[in-house]
Amino acid sequence: MRIDKFLNSVNITKRRSVAQDMLANGVVEINGVVVKPSKNVEVGSVITINYLKEPKKYEVLQIPTTKSTPKSLQHEYIKEIS
Image (tube, rainbow, N blue to C red; front, side):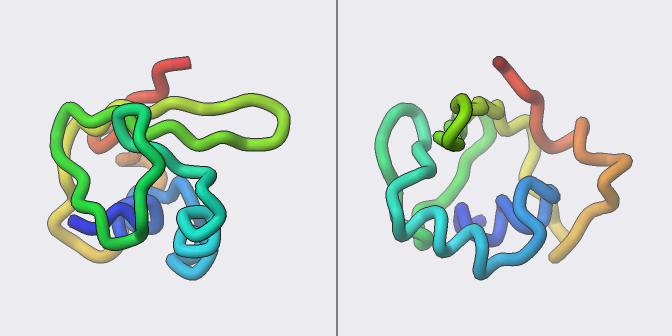
């Protein structure tokens, strides 16, 4: 699954356009490498989002099969590392 779709479907971003904007500005990294919106996410990857205050890291536990997932099930797809 593409990183921009993944960020939206697991409720890290509210809209896919927000995820695409973050990716275009180099704020999102996968395993320490700044990526483009078309980069695929794999189970076990570490996604880092460099927010202004502090970066947040998430480990990918599972790839969703649907376009959106309930926020209550977010813990099944990602785990916040630090």
